[in-house]
Image (cartoon, rainbow, N blue to C red; front, side, top):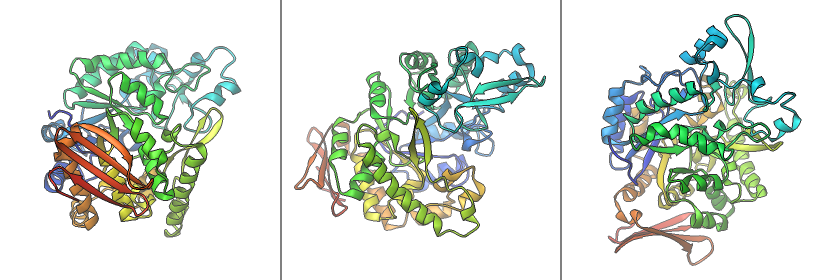
Length: 489
C-alpha cells in the first residue's frame, strides 16, 4: 500500500476514466504515470443511488467496477483514498431492511434517529426549523412504513435512498468499527463524508456542533488509530472549521480556493486571494472542482456576502446561457442551476453547477492560471477527473443521470482521454503537474507576496537551495514559473 505523498492526487469515479477499475489503472499507467501520484476513488461499493453515496454495504466492490484485487493493485502504485459515509446508509442496507421488517425488535432499531424521540415534547417549533442547517425543503425528516404497517419518522438529511444513523448508538459504532477496519486494510486515507451533519442537538443548526462533534470524531477514529490511517473530513463551511480540524492533526479541504480564484480572475482583484494564501492551512487537500460543484459557503469570512453573490451570479448567468443553447428536449430537464440551503432562516447558494472549465467560459489562459495557483498553494493538490481533462458541461448527462450535477460527471472513454491529452492545454497542465510532483521545493517553506503590481502575485517555495516560484498576473492571465534548476514553464 503506497503511503500518502505531497504530490498531485486525482479524484474520480471508478467508471469515469475508461469504464471500470482495470481501465482506470490502464489509463493512469498509460497517460498520467508522472502526473498522478494519488487517486481518491469515489464510492465503489454496492449502492442504491446518489452516484455511489447511498452505500448498501462495504463488504465488496461493486462488480460493475471490479474487485478488491483491483483496488489493492492500484493501491500499490498510487496513494488511494476512499469514502466512508459517517452520517448515513442506504435504505437498501441490511441494517435498515432488518429494522423495517422487525420494528422495535430489530437489533438495529436504535441505529436510526427517530424524529419524534429526538425532539423534546412540543417540538420542533418554528425557531428549531429556522436555525437548522437544512439541505432540502421541509427539513430532514421522512416517513417510512414498517412491515407491520406502522409508520415511523426518521432523520434523513439528504436524498431518498439515504437515511441518517446515530453515531452514539452501539449498533452504529459496531457498524463503524467493522467497515472502517475493512477499508483501512486497503487504503491509507479515508474521507468522512458529510461529517459535520452527524452532530445533531435540538435548537441548534445540527451541523458541526461542539463539543459533540469531537466526541463523534473520537468514536469514529478509534478503528483508524489501529492502523494509522489518515482521516479527511468533508465539510463545506467557513474556513474556521477547517482550522479547528487541522489543529487536531487531521487533513482538511481547501474548498474556499475555487471561489476566491474565480473572483480574482473575473473581477481582477487579488486582495481576498492573497489574504487566504497567507493564512490557509498547510495540512490540507486543495481543490478547484469536485463531483458536487464549486463551493460558495466555503468562502464565508474570506469574502463579503456581496462579493460571494456577485461572482456566483456571474457564473450562474454563464451556466444558464450555456444551457439555453441546448436542444429543446434537454431544456425540459432540471439543470440544477444552483444548490440552495437554509442557514439560520436564510436561503443561500451552497454550490455552483457546471465544470470548472466551462464556468471559466472555456478561457484556456484563465484556466491554466487557476491550476498553476492551485499547484503552488500549500497542501496536496487534488484534481477532479473532469477538470484534469478540461471537460465542458455535459448537458446530455441530464438524460441518463440522477440530477443536474451530472453535467459535471461525464464518463470519458479511453479514446476521448487519448485525444484530450494531446491538446496544448493539457500538455501545459501536465507539465505543471510533473513539476509539482518532482521538485523538492514543495516540501519546504511557502511565502506569497505582491509582485510589481497588486494584480501580480508571487507564490514561492524554498527548501534549502532548491526553490520554485510562480508569478501569476491576474490582469493578463499569464504566469511564469522559475525553479532553481533554471527550467521554465
